[in-house]
Picture 1 (cartoon, rainbow, N blue to C red):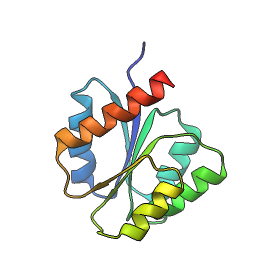
Picture 2: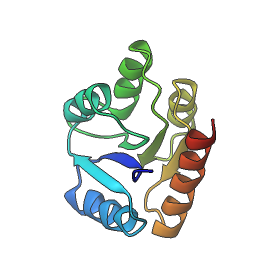
Picture 3: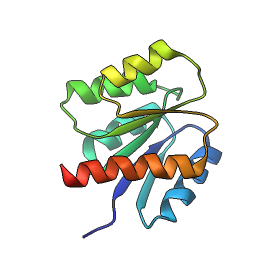
Length: 125
């Protein structure tokens, strides 16, 4: 069985590096991108088991990416990351298919745990 492949999209290189190191320590393959268009394309063309998607990124917002992935019929479990405390936006992301919503700053142990839950669900579905 191959390692899970995870897309991490955040405009902050410090955040992507933190997530990348944290998830690589679990033995998972991580691909990082830094703007909304890269995230959109990578999600549509790559084969991923899970995505972490920042809400505020250049070019496209996380919710816009989710809308386009949803319209394209993409079945990619996505955890939204956001420093914004906006319940309406969180609900909209969940309505568009996000499986979880994690507010920044986050604890890496919690991030790993949420990823494990989603990967387990995907692999046992």
